[in-house]
Image (cartoon, rainbow over all chains, first blue to last red):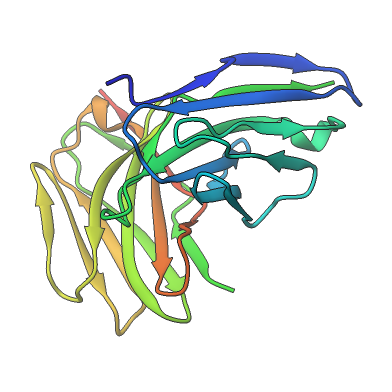
Length: 113
Length: 111
């Protein structure tokens, strides 16, 4: 199993540009999450999904959108990038029966200039 | 709103020292508290605590929850340079599917 994979690893955007951060897991996990981590800070939940077709807002959803058309994929979309969205983005997934352990992807480092 | 506060923010020790990291929380309906270690990239799971007073142990790392004090500690004995990382505490309540993370403690272990 590859686990949770994220692409790209790094990206620089200009203000106002759009992009999609990709996240895929091959563990057949129902639950998937998107977090952002600012320098020196903990993780903040952006959006999460409890299964295909179902998404919900987390703590800091403004400026982002998600979709969950399949169990495996949970892309995160930034429509109009802003400098405040400069951060490291982590995707995570977990089994329904293991409510506490989340498996994290390697992260995407995004800089908005 | 659930809240998780970790202290200290950062810590520098020498190899062989013992360290104690703190996590305090406010939650409406507690379900579990988790500790993660984050080195260069993604966090990796260390411990899950649900019951007060029961120590979880893995090698030189141990953790215990005190529900009365709304806190948990993570102990690392005989620290090694490989223990250098950010240690994250996270809280899950009964209501939702989300984890609330603290800001982390950055530990640096010098040779």
